[in-house]
Length: 354
Image (cartoon, rainbow, N blue to C red; front, side):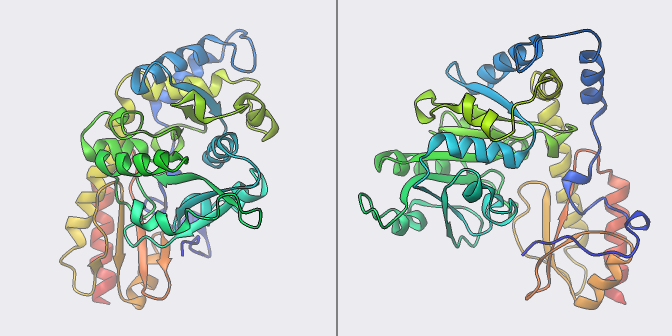
């Protein structure tokens, strides 16, 4: 599974396709931070920027939506899941989900949840995949299923349709469960689907959402968005207890306002998605290279010969995905340029040719 590529001198290797986390800060977001810097404002969220973020979130997700800014994506997932569940609860996720693979057991260690991973070849859960794990209710020997958590867009670059999310929500609610969405790349999913974000979140029955900003132009900061107030308990206390309550919260909120008050979030995501499609189209016909998954968001997954991958890593950093098959992941971001894509595609062709 995914692991950071080892390079002798990281400064000598182009980082452009390793992760959308490697991207910088969008100038409009940086300007918003600069504008928020002078003067004094009340701490811990009692500031005009956080108040404005609340209004922006309600506009996107409905009148009942409430935003709780946090420092990072892992924090958003842990705070949201912990507020939705009891310490003896279980959360069902995919075996490739970030909360299971890449958050160092935080949901289990900090939130106290038992994660129940499910193999999902396309990265997406379905009621049929979840159903075998929704069992053991009332049995003190078993963690009690409480939450289904999905990722949009998924770690495999695929995107849930509104109908797929709604089917999971209907299944979950019919069995007394809740539906949580890790939306670290929610903007990329919305850009891919061409629908408002609420179409596959609030309108589809999602209860709690992690709203991503870092991968889409922010310096840092995400938000837990509670779509159904009845789905959480004590989230204000959980956020503080989990070390995710920022004293100078205006600097997190100002970034999210800059992204989501207008259409910057969508423009950034559309560009990242377009760069991924450009890359996939450019390398699809290269001998020895095979695109392995649908390119629906801003990631390209491919298999290429081991020697070719090794030669390519001498110039570019990127993540291996499956060591057994040689599958790798190439990510595009809001600041990826067409020239960078074309140069990387040429390097792929050269590496494949030996």
